[in-house]
Length: 215
Picture 1 (cartoon, rainbow, N blue to C red):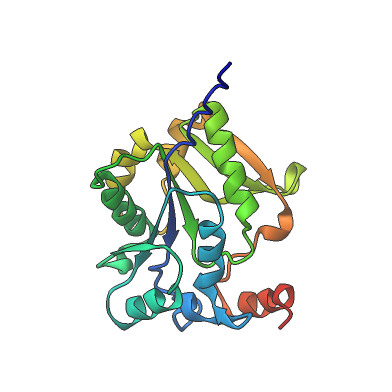
Picture 2: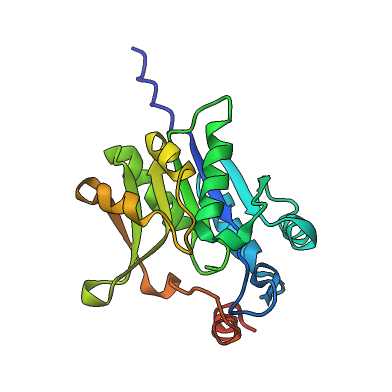
């Protein structure tokens, strides 16, 4: 008697958005030292251990982009450049979606993670993937904490059929909010520990981030 062959996991792309302008930090925050390595390396490492079939980092042009590539050396990332990071975070979403749509093997879903959230764990990425595999929902969002204090924040997963809309986002300093509103009724939410929610946008936030890394 032959055993059933398990279905393969959906082919998902994990994206690291690492082309931010760092206007509140004053220096390229992607490269800020944290726990002995660049800030972006922490988020990238979680993506690399999160169960994705492919990984992509969106980087800025010039020296900063080259330094981000170097900071991720040894991790299995492909790279694409956002030539105009000044057009806001949505421009990095567009760059990633355009790259994903051009690949010969289609992705079932794409997860977008921020390079300045160093405490997000591989378990959070795995939970997003499990929720998508079990539901096929158009979007799977992370929610940090419980009750009225809970906060929705990246990483966000989008089903592949939404990528063309992501690739057409207008300039904005935020993600695809209108898209999330359109699919709110069918979105799945995954609850994660509040301790993972830290967005390193300022020198003060970077100082707070040192404690979990023993610095």
